[in-house]
Amino acid sequence: MSRTHFDLSRRDLLIAGAGTAVAATALSRFVPEAHAAAPMLGGSRPTHYRFKLGDFEITTIFDGQLAIPKVHPIFGKNQKIEDVQAYMTENHLPADKMTISFSPVIVNTGKEVVLFDTGYGEERRDKGAGKMAATLATAGFSPDQIDVVVITHCHPDHVSGLREGDKTSYPNARYVTGDVEYNFWSNKDLLSHSDKGMVGRAKAVQSNVVPLVEKIKFIKPGDDVVTGITSIQAFGHTPGHMIYNLESGGKRFVIFADVTNHYVASLAKPDWHCIFDMDAEVAVATRKKVLDMLAADKIPCSGYHMPFPAVGYVEKNGGGYRWVAASYQMDL
Ligand SMILES: [Zn+2]
Image 1 (spheres, protein in one colour):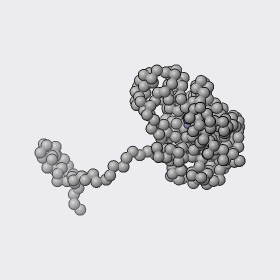
Image 2 (image 1 turned 45 degrees about the vertical axis):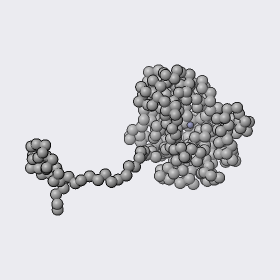
Image 3 (image 1 turned 180 degrees about the vertical axis):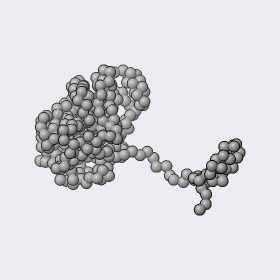
Image 4 (image 1 turned 90 degrees about the vertical axis):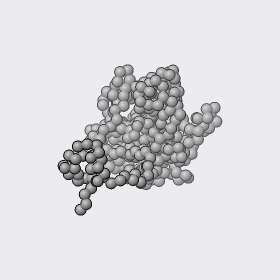
């Protein structure tokens, strides 16, 4: 067997240590020339994350992310732009741009597979979101295995993935959403709203949610989706936004959807208005109430716009809160 750079003898090392010229000679005898012929692959990240909660199995799915060319006034609309930008810089984030990511959650209770929100679907696939259809398979699920789809609220990043082309994405599913939320968004008057953004969101509901009405169960805060999954009122982000408490084997987990939209700003500065919140003040009150509960009871949780895998804990920190991302020890 010929010698390689892996089997330098002690003598070779002593020679190499004796001087630069000698070292170069010793190494050139054994180190093969590098070619670096492999192409650059671009960035990479995991697309699903799975762990146990009692008898449940929870999987978060990466639907993708969108680049947004500003931070203020999306976050901190009621603050000075320079204060918001300084706070981003302080937190190692760009001051004048950001990415926002989307993370639906699948809960397998052992009896049914429940999907919370569906990602952006085709609508923003060309911009880097809407990957759910592809990542679902990577995570080990097929669309026909989804028994229940829960819609936390009707914004396009949560409902546009309900359909692919002219077909429903989850052929065997029944659907669950809040009655307040559906009644607000399904009103056709919104299609002639003076705010173009509202018209776009209303159109997304008309094309993705309304056609499913026969299969939707409308619930109120406190109602169960299935045994062990209960809705909690969290109005403000949208008129009928709801979050979900999971309990299995004495363990608890909360899917808090869009109570927060930014893992730093929404937690550290819960009073900062977010442009995505339809009633900013009600959303602030809800945010504080939910974050207080998560922090006080040390409840593991998932937020739709938290950094993937979008699973962690909330802690009190000064006058606000901070996001504590899940570690590899997340099995509960
Ligand atoms: Zn959202």
